[in-house]
Image 1 (cartoon, helix red, strand yellow):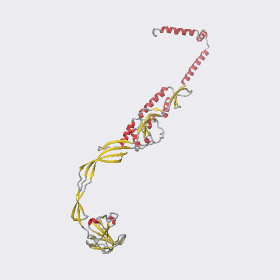
Image 2 (cartoon, rainbow, N blue to C red):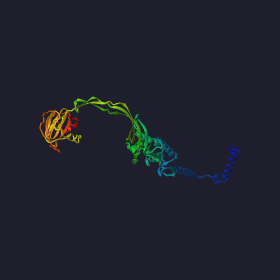
Image 3 (tube, rainbow, N blue to C red):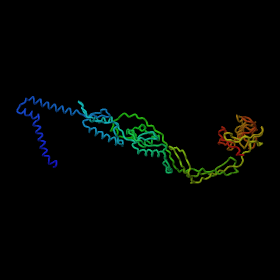
Image 4 (cartoon, rainbow, N blue to C red):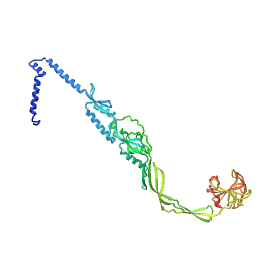
Length: 462
């Protein structure tokens, strides 16, 4: 027999039991006693008052029970229904997750306990605002570790590939003539799971900038709003608050080694070819054909560490344009005569700035000859030169030092081979000799200072 077809019989049995219970109950006895009796109106009034008071007291008791909302054991407020808090937290977590781009959770434990609170009122709006003010969030993230040193967190372990890519490309030259052969990070970079404040999460690019020691805004260096620097919607979720004091992360040094092959064009210096001209004096020259640099294509393998070249190897080169030689005509005619009449003996040669002329030893009193025709500009005594003479020629100066006696005067015109003084050892000298110099003229007719005229090796003129 089905449940539906047996219901009338069951119903009849239930009613019979209720009738038997009522027949022998105290309520039936009371009603039989009151039957036919007339009660005073005050009794009715008192009964009604008791019933109304009981109902009111019961209502007050029932409505004085609230749900106490606590955050890590600290009371936040009272609400009438748990759904008010649950719905608020669901919406808040949804907003925060959308804001940060990652799933977030409250760090504190939220509890709702039903308690009797006489004389207090529930305020769901104030309670939810208290939760908004006091709630702290966390998210599952990945801590970037460099050679065992934790740096900063990123959103997930997948970010490590992007970090390495940013680091690798930081020192790669973007040039069509550069071919990247190898990029290697000397340090070991990996991630470890962690739980952090979503405000402390970095982007892969920001982590790369930190490791590369690039200048970053202060809020990024202190892990503040590093993930999304421009979150305009944040203040709509949280009101203005005192910023947290956070320590700057310790940033280890990383080394990015790149090996690249680059092709560059380089100049090939042109050579100089000399053509002798007997109609020009020794020391005179002129360019009759300018030189032109050539061009060659060179392939180098370059190794850099953090952008600095540590090794450069020439792999191959190819001449594109041959250089054109410069042709210079130079004189071979001897312009000057030997300045010591008896020939003498060279005791010290030209050494540039160490010794700007040649020393010709000869007996004291030997005639000193003008090497070429010119005008005497100085005939005097000075230290350490002793008695000395300076003669101006066309394009040159000749200098004669340590003379025992000068026999020409300043302003006097002299001829090539003319006696102008005698060998001596005046001034700073170790014995009878002539210190002879040839200096190139700077275009001025005045001697000026010794440093105004660069010395030339005299032996190329004899």
